[in-house]
Image (cartoon, rainbow, N blue to C red; front, side, top):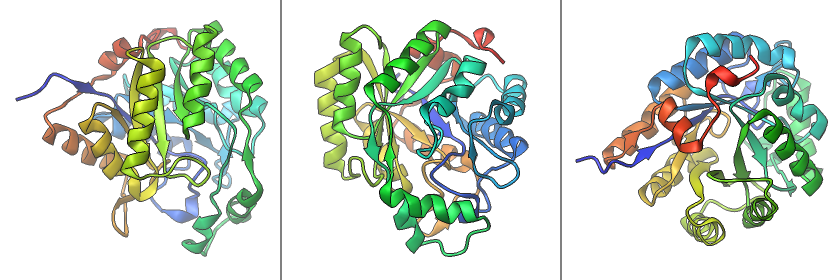
Length: 310
């Protein structure tokens, strides 16, 4: 018997953490990214979270020209909510990271809620061969990298969103990020329902132990009460276990090849849709219903797909 709780599945299709040499299944070209997002939506994702890549070498790109063909295909190919990144890559300036959201005015955009160390260099122990020099350099340079998201940066992005009626997926990599969000809520710059994406297992942020998850939940409940929707993002091998634990105690979930390349121990996921299908099976086994895109829009109070700039 269903318990009538509808769970939003977000799929993060591609991103800045993983590089093309790490998996042959990571979408790189505009056509591949759009196809992967549409397939994920067909599998049950109500929201698709979008990054773009330079088609020449697969490096992360915030050039609106690289987003435009993806968004055009998604607009005609799916009714899923399209969530555009303002995170881009930790190696980019905030001004560069904001360009696609300024240009395309989406229903939803991601927003990192604090500066942090962002250590990707342990991946060098797992992956040895890279097709492009930028891949190794990006991982190695993360030993001395601060992902800059100051109060001024966050405020600028929040004001931009307000001007365009774009709402945010607030990505919180640690407890301090929840407090930062509460600060902006108190100032009236962030308003409910807050969509809080708790991120676990990235070096520099909170860990991926179930106790870390519970600490995030308790803190968010204390700070936001009933004015937020909670979602779980577990990096790497933590993806499905934390999605399962989180959903069992009331969270929504995020999966996708941006966050994890894996579908099981030592087994690469063949697609984003495979991860969405796996987490959907878990959710339905727990007797939850899967939210449709329009149900997600209603829950998050989004402006509607007819009011975007693409």
